[in-house]
Length: 260
Image 1 (cartoon, rainbow, N blue to C red):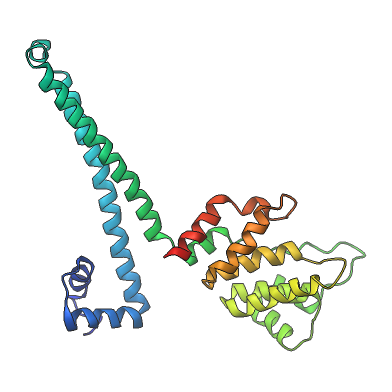
Image 2: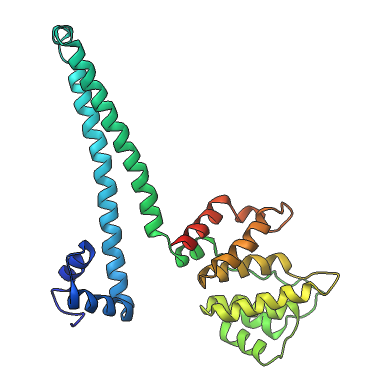
């Protein structure tokens, strides 16, 4: 089946609704696994459906409330002649509204669960590390620092790979450069090396920074257990440089990613 055929959107809708069976369903499964653009199109369709359902629940609650208020505005004579019936109607509407609110809340959490991804959690919490400007009399910039400041991330990684800069800062910047290049494996290796070295020395260098960026690299790499271990430690340490960035919401989101 050709992804570019005009009937593909309709087939995706049928696939989403569960109406495709047998070879047709298998064909869509294979195409979604092999085509990132098609998978993104399907994800957008899924989110659109969830958003419509969410909006529909809101409208249902609104309609029930308006109906109940309309009956409550009926003439007093009507209420006096059928008090029991009126009471039952109000109870029924109240129960319906309560049930709809529960569905609305549930729909909200389902929507958040469905839309959550490692990439958007990463993006929401990633902030590019900025080098401080050298002051007069300070040591001159290293080749790693110059390349990083210039945004030449490939050169930063090359310097590290060639072992031309084995300082803690050089290794840390290489990890940051790898993040910018979407190389999770390299980033994790560099930040882990910084932390391992810090365990062996009295004066630690860039330890808090390496921990935070390592946790983000783990999130993007879908290593959620490792990310949670680091983030929980950061959250439990008020003195940590990134303590305020690791919120309960962030930890909850990572846990949700782990459950998916």
